[in-house]
Length: 498
Image 1 (tube, rainbow, N blue to C red):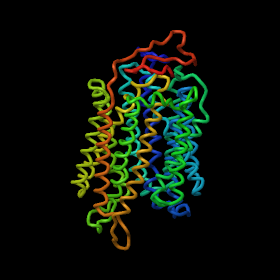
Image 2 (image 1 turned 45 degrees about the vertical axis):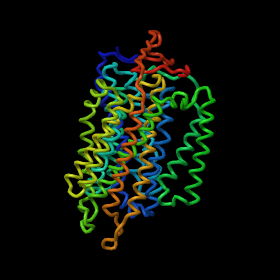
Image 3 (image 1 turned 120 degrees about the vertical axis):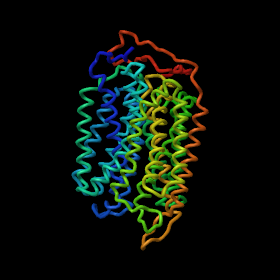
Image 4 (image 1 turned 90 degrees about the vertical axis):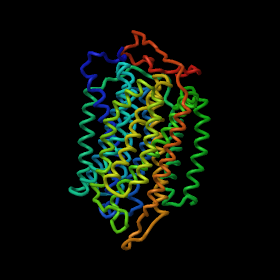
């Protein structure tokens, strides 16, 4: 049985997964595309290193804030509509970055680029609405994996540009990709009639945005500002107070931004906790690999490779994420998403075991990084299916937006932890302060332990009692009224809220 807005004979349906997946890859590219450029940006823009770091922080903050907000807006006002908004804003931000060498304008452009992170939960929700049940798992697995694929591809591509072309060419390329994918979305994706009724929670949106800005700003800048500085502690304290007030508001309002009664259920809460751990563990691999192989040979452990080759070390992992998507789909279909998540968490941990004992030669480093990416692919494929089966269809984009947000928070915390570790264990080589090999080993041990925590969270996720099929009234097809299509092993909402 097909979704309410398309039929199996619709020729556009065969292009739906590739087009939405392309959106996810382009959005994920924006998260890492500027990283190889960071050492050169202060000279290129005439600014300080601390100011330049905001080109990464701003993207992280805007993505974290906009992912749950656009997810909820998509559930209420149309997922394709919000997808078009996100890709359009990404295009505008890319053009701004391509046309400027002013650090202020560059940071604004990077902020706009980060908003496109919301395309992944929006795409997952569209796939749930539009594809036949038998094809949803594969489509969702590929869509979710684009987060890792884009991150893995972004570093080597950006490294090649930094080594061989003007740095603005990187953003012109991003603009061309964004406009191409936006055109494909307009041609291929149909607007789903599945809507969540009610009014948009403006107060809840502002509260969540304020909480995320305070939390992620403190976490991402804590190492530079000092973890006991007044600025860091004030932001963390404000985040706690805002979260408490926001939670009380969400509990009382009639149509909340995040339905805490649903989100607090173990079947939803535990996958979100697992997503936090997976995001942390995966990002440690991305942050450490390129730095490790680019460290000068004089350090005694570094390989002294170029920026481009350092980025290419992550490319096999991106390829494995593509290859493993159909495998994880089959595993999810036969053994369930919880089993697939558990296998992925085990692979993730084993990858760091490999990295601890084999970080001396280029091919063994690539092998360890690829094992980590393989485990991440399995986890990213399973997490959306765990969320989908536990929530009403009309909340799919918002719920997966929260799950994606938890991964982002995990990545932000990981960035702070890795920075703290690599600056705590250092050596002086040729007048330069470099991390020791022991520092990288500590990072790998921490990431492996966090992968173990993800496995524990996975084992605690309850199995559903059974699928609940919700028919679609014929008269609702093609309308903008809130409808609830067939769900995929969805458990009923005991509170009656949708």
